[in-house]
Length: 552
Image (cartoon, rainbow, N blue to C red):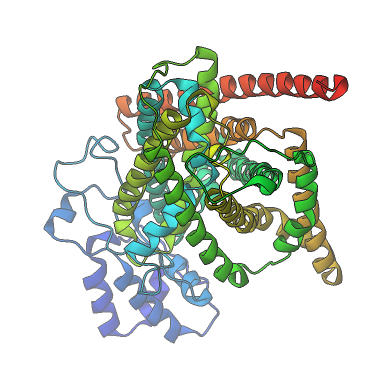
């Protein structure tokens, strides 16, 4: 074990001068650096000293006046560890802040750019601005968008769009908080990347009385990620069964006339829950594809057909608005809880934010991607939710596709969107599988690894199918998933994370209050939305069972 003094004495005079020039005032005689190198590797020691010097932050005269912070110095020990494992040293750039509120004692002026802020995408191999924007849009536009017209109905024609706008602004703000906290904590921990769970774990480590239990922060976040992703999969089962069932039952009398063709002859078929069982084996085979690379062509095709279908849905809704518009501007107070669950389900794209930021060629531009992308998403949500409700009025269904006329053009739209949702199931399922399966496989002998892997995949798909069968109501499944899990990931956790990450760095009181208010709103929405949705599920199931029993 060498100390900094041993390294200094073993280096030639030219290296000593170079180290002295690079280190300057940042290295003092009182700092002892321990380098875990084997005896006799003096040449590697000299190389590591050079790496340490080049990896430090180099600034102008203004940097001298800033208060010295020990955690911002990258030690030779960390450099040695990174060098020996082949990883890239993490940045020693300044702490990210939200305007000047996070560091009110800092002198006024622009903050230092994080020039050495490193991510996997650095070096030209990551995604571009446009590619990241497309991925962000794809991660936020799905079945939640199609359920927003019913959400606007629950809130009212005026209150609904305004609430979507407010919720969009708050959701984007929470995404921005998550990115800033991840950057700050990854810099402090000298790691190139932290996912959502790891970010929350490191945030709890920043608080002395929570440090012992910090691992539970990661576990809780991962638990809600699993619940959210499997909840999406439940929604997909219900969506597939409802849309395919409607196409099948109207097939005998469907024509190409989309103007005055409201199919009146419906041939009753199976219950929607039997359709879910029919989809079950095909989805199980789909998720057996453990490498998503093989699904890339199908994913591209799914994105294409879903985009075309969405354009046709917009076109029909806009061109078939009925006048005069006599719809309530404010919905019932009880139904607003259902609106909250559906809306937060639609805006819950926070799980894709950190992976996308991590893989950008220029991660410092991710804030622009976030604001542009989520601005487009918010406009789409408000416009389709409002126009869809105005077009179909009080008869709007849990998915606007179920209100489209039964002509072949829009029947094909339903089938194409269903195909896109079918492929997307594997992508949403992948997140939960990658959290659960490696833990289970690591506990069994290698010869059983494949069997355990496929068995867990089968059980998880069967579990999502069973939940969908228990709650075969698309709007209620969406609201329940949004209220239970999406509210925590999108609204409750990010503000709390900012308080944990910056609590000892001069966090402004108004910023703490703002974060507490956002988290409280999320928690109230969680409680009210969950209670109202479960109550509605019980009522509809009772009505369904009564109808089946008496044959009414």
